[in-house]
Image (cartoon, rainbow, N blue to C red; front, side):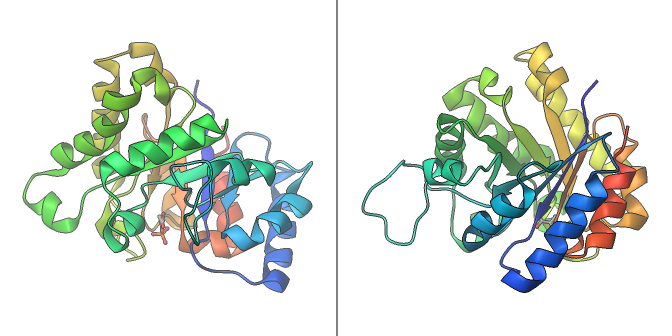
Length: 251
Ligand code: PEP
């Protein structure tokens, strides 16, 4: 049975004082909820704070991106090996905001995925279609292309130590959530596509749903057979909301 995972994506939000309160509250809450995994992916400058406050707690932490190379003359960039120094467990790669705002291609995302695993961290690979693509009936084609970019270059076994997050772009930060049925259909498609290459990998890999998950809709989403938790943006910035979502993920 796959253990559920709820991962917060703080995006470019936070401040030392408010993070301290939030991280303490999440750590305290998760101490009472051993039935699911929980992580927060914080902005780079707050990794040291997350490490200091969360070490020894039930909450793991991670980053939201990493460069595809380990070091070099790349001003402003951060490598996965640096993230490893801060005790990260997870690194989000291919978030739709990075694909759309910073032009990250699926090929680049695959390189980042490999770099994260090369540093012995776990990539959270985001895939998902825009509203236009959904309305044009292209959801499966788009998701397959984003997924295949990783498996074609790294092999399906690369998914073993990874997490996939299905995040329909039209549901991110919009308050519009995919229905549990819509989400389940794409999750099942992803799992079947992986199973066509390796049934064991498909059974084991966790596939999270992301896109306006809230306390009010989390339980229904997480009850679906192929939804193994959530990647949570806005609601991860409020301890009560985030913990309520974590509670919905308890097995
Ligand atoms: C996200 O950014 O990954 C996300 C799912 O955001 P939100 O929960 O705010 O829609």
